[in-house]
Length: 190
Image (cartoon, rainbow, N blue to C red; front, side, top):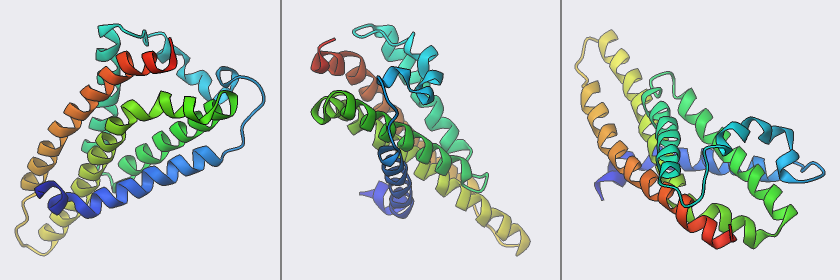
């Protein structure tokens, strides 16, 4: 498969960053009381107003929100790969923390049913977008090096490869948004 040949090591790095974030989030000690009262989730409250199960506008909201995150991760790769790595670690941390909090308040199966169905598509999309961003960061460094050494290097070819990956990212995020809006609420009984 061409995607793995072109982006394999970057996908591996991005996956390890996401797993690190998930692990750190899951290992963070939980506060007392319901998940909704945890201060770390207070910043998410404005976004929850837009989440209405079984509503097509929710699909558009989730797709826009997640596509923006993926786009930032992709296009900011030339900034020394810091932003894509940070996005992976932060998103992994939040999901790990939320999953652990839901599991402790309800149950592990309930936590998995809220996160896994759409996460099966959303996590790979985020990993692919970040991997393409990291690859773009490496390509930017190679371009600078080629200028210093007065050799040729095509940054635009690397950007084109990343854009092809980004099309797949949008498809995966669309599927995730539909599942999160229609399937997840049915699974958890809302």
